[in-house]
Image (cartoon, rainbow over all chains, first blue to last red; front, top):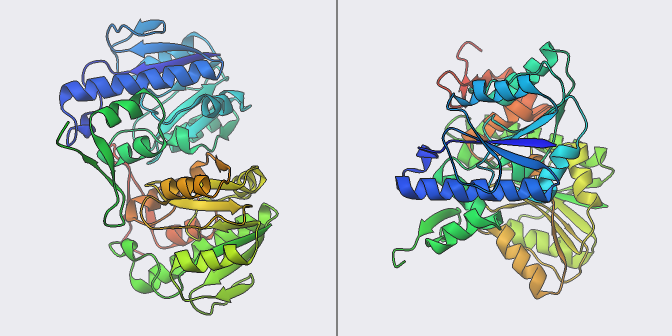
Length: 205
Length: 205
């Protein structure tokens, strides 16, 4: 199946500013993208990147500088079935993506923490996305409104998009790809000295 | 399979103090326990509650007022196989628990967000728990040290333990049992007016 991975080239992951500078955010976002593309390929999907600007990456790239919602809706209007998988799922693995792609249904969704929609499989020609706010709830309603069946897949790995510093804990604990390596190389490690689990960055690197 | 659900009777869920008073925290914790017991039963498991004090609930209750780790290790020392499922998994469903109980392996774990271990199936007699800090990492190591195989199940529903106010968003979005009903009855609803998803409590209830 075609699997579209949208990617913001210029200023990705601004909410990681407390722990990563702009160059680091770009490099880390790119490492996560590489992990997602590898997971999609492992799952037997055909990944392509929908990027806001030109990008050198190991997959076909389409450039569309519109915001996420109209850019994805143009993809959905052109042809289905198609899957949409976010580029910041640093815990995604082949089996997790396979679980998504293999689930039957007109619209299959993997919810993200905080109400997002981290991955979709769209097999119904009339379904459209709206990624603002608690999008998983809106997508459920949109599917209902166009008469499309709605299925949710239950995956911690697909639920864990990486937006904020606290999310890096999950990558250090459960990641096994480029993004986890990138963090380890830059000195990020777990800190659970006080019984609450956080992340620290060693200053001697 | 025996499924032990540990439950703190007296002062549960203190980190929800910003949004729930002590009586409400007790009632909400109890609603989550009821949901977990129902999910275990739906999955074909035999739930029993390991409580810190006497409790009237629709399952057998054993009282052990020790901290979580020694109380669970006494259970493991007495007999295996046994599963341990946390009482605050308000998103747990029968299929999610069934996925856990059906997974093969000496030790099967469902990681929680932030490094916790939200559910375990223990089939190896020498495995013991240590719930302090990033316990999923410690449990992986303990399994290795005793020569037990280690399997992780990938479930958003089992990963979502409810400790902090932000976790209530997940219950409102994805819960379908007593805990979700309890929150709705007390006026909790989503707030995504500014594009970030939070929770508000209506003041007219």
